Image 1: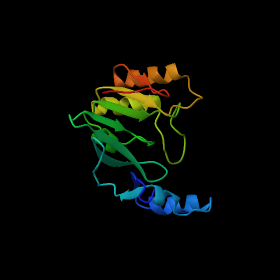
Image 2 (image 1 turned 180 degrees about the vertical axis):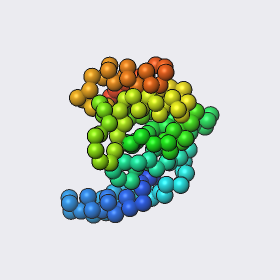
Image 3 (image 1 turned 90 degrees about the horizontal axis):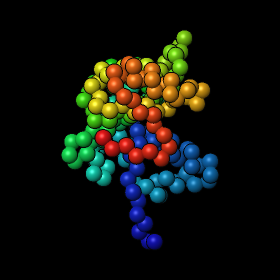
Image 4 (image 1 turned 90 degrees about the vertical axis):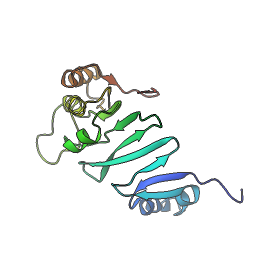
Length: 172
């Protein structure tokens, strides 16, 4: 059409340039910017996406990474940890959340170097300390027995823990 729809696409600062670099490999540097209205956000920004209010929290990882929280019109909160090492920022950010979707990648902490992921036990501990009402672990390695990961997280959380699975729908 002469005036195509360009839905909003929210990305961290520098996202537009990264999109241009990636799509230039296909010969169309402005592909993403032609398809979307790109909004670059700062860690402290808050914005609305459809019926949700979106909040961000920087968490420690190998690269700039944000936990994200969606707040529904009724105040219901869903918090996603993103990949992160153990940290108090996420615990405070997710305090009292209705649903914490948290990564549980590692069977045990890395022995050396910078951390970028949680163990199932650490994921459960983060959920307990945050006072999350419900905990779903995700991004657990296919090298882990999912039931073992769930049990480890549940023991640290002090309550039931669900395993994220493809196609699942989670309502807080």
